[in-house]
Image 1 (cartoon, rainbow, N blue to C red):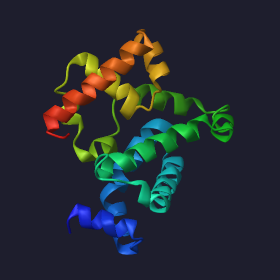
Image 2 (image 1 turned 45 degrees about the vertical axis):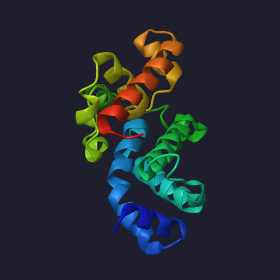
Image 3 (image 1 turned 90 degrees about the horizontal axis):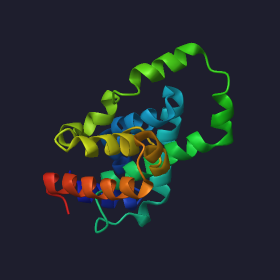
Image 4 (image 1 turned 180 degrees about the vertical axis):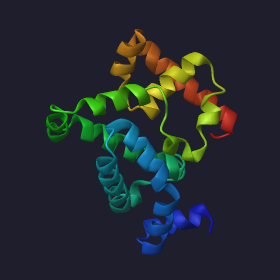
Length: 177
């Protein structure tokens, strides 16, 4: 079934279309969310919330503004970041075991395999080193622009410009408007 038809049916509240899109994108969404929240159960919970939110707000999606995958990816990324900023999340991380920190240190520089389920990593790797750094922090690790600015020790304006330019390079590489 063509994606446009599937998305249209999803917007018309067709449960079969929901199930098909969920099966198509859940692994990728889970990977992105997991890279931000670093908790498998929590990532699963947020992912389900994302699909429910997408279902309830499906009328706000327009193919003229971008691809469906990008739309739902942004919902997932924002939901995961919102979860990490919640008081409940912060309180749950106050008394963590040392194993959690070791895991973070080991995984911090390597992307979760599920994040690459859509195959975007091979295109990102073709970009300049400065682009890879910014894209990994902002999109794969869930950093805010301010956090990326501090981590890379560069002005936030440079982060914003570099992000915009690098995403444009990816669009050209992928032949996407």
